[in-house]
Image: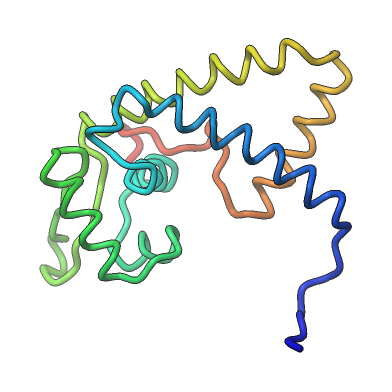
Length: 160
């Protein structure tokens, strides 16, 4: 039997988070519905990584997405074709390539994020106030543990 090096976690907590993740995946799918012919959920995730972390080397994007570099390259080829990201060679080292969101990609991420905000606001409005604060604290810690960059700390295009 394989042994796990992960700390023991309450299975009830895992079940609660799985339930919440189903809700959030449904919100994500609905928010992308208008763009589903243009971008898949995994492609959208790549756009969000670029939006939240700024320009990335292809290998760094692959690591952030948890995919092989070849998978990331194919994914990026499609996003470049759709003019949602750009590839640029670095001036100091022509071998190094940086991926960045195009203006069209930024617009798409902004639209989808706004749709998600509206739906999440609707769900949160159904909760008592004290529960909202507890959820905010829990999700803030959860996002931090997962290495996510909070929306208010995303780089702005004029800062890059």
